[in-house]
Length: 224
View 1: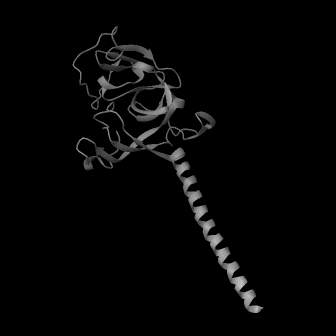
View 2: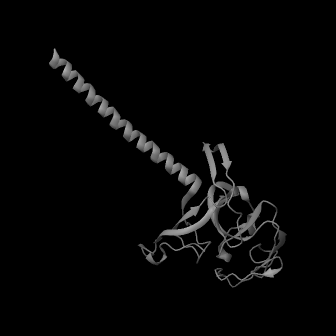
């Protein structure tokens, strides 16, 4: 009888240990998932450069981290294309001219874009023959490239001659550094601040698809 009781108790202890181990693994996995969601949603997000609109500052195949705290982190929960919960926390600061920002594309918020802020709310912006003017002053932009020598007239395109406009309250004006090959605020208007996701921070990886090799010289460079 005592032997049977001892065996039963031993079996119960093994089952309890097994349940305890399973519970520990389940809790660890759940904690990892929650931390991943929180960190990605509130602190930092990874982003891959898909197009050449920010060349030569950012190249196709660059991977970078985006700081989501600086402009106000978001809690954005949705299902089947419908937003269920949305909350934006207070920002540390507003976007400044020159910041490179990841944001939701206004015409399709399911897509993320990355461009440079070239004017903030209340500023007057104008483009004359490819030269950017802010509040009447031509801007020095050493990061900008032009790969098309043509200057398109105002009646033909918004690309090279635009404005003047005053950036509305609660908006910023976004442009790509590759000015002749960028779909930006010149075409879809100033960006509402509630579409801003975060500030580009640092490159952590870069892959040259044409050469099939990493660009090691770009790793861990700050995005400026």
